Amino acid sequence: MAKTMKKKTAHYVDNKKFLEAMKEWKEKCREAEETGEERPQISNYVGECFLKIANGLSYRPNFINYTYKEDMISDGIENCLQYIHNFNPDKSNNPFAYFTQIIYYAFIRRIQREKKQTHVKHRIISKADFQAFVTMEGDDTSYSVGGFDPNIMVPDEDVYKPKKKNKEINKKGLENFMESDD
Image (cartoon, rainbow, N blue to C red; front, side, top):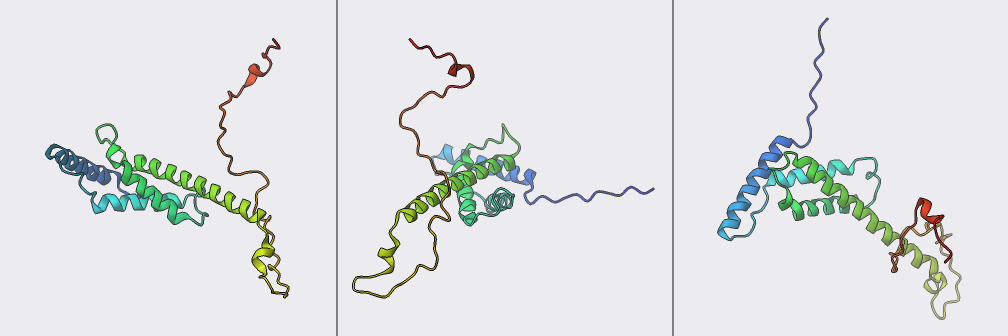
């Protein structure tokens, strides 16, 4: 019986090579800091890794069907560039995981922002007087909006809930029963 060799899967980002590139960049940063210069630019390889991680993460099932996927990817790369100096190769030898988390949370923030904007748009549409947009003064022709129902896209409950101004302590468990009627 011959053993079948498992084909080694190639990852789209080589973590060891990525770690070495990050160490080189951190060393350049240290040298620039000692001489009083600005932080150096990242290498093309590091930028390419950010792009590959963001693109790869955008194909996960929880992110794949959004129409603003390019915005999510851009936000993720921007956040990686913004927080690249926080990565410490002495503490972690896994830059792939570090930057994947940064991109993941950038995606989540973009989705929340877009949901808020969509909710605001739907609220505006639901309160708008469409006849004012369809006819003009002196126009006696009848126009229809084409069967457009503005309430079709409006969710039943508010997707975006503004923050409460007064901070009230949420009671959990037994605290509901322990109130005194003093």
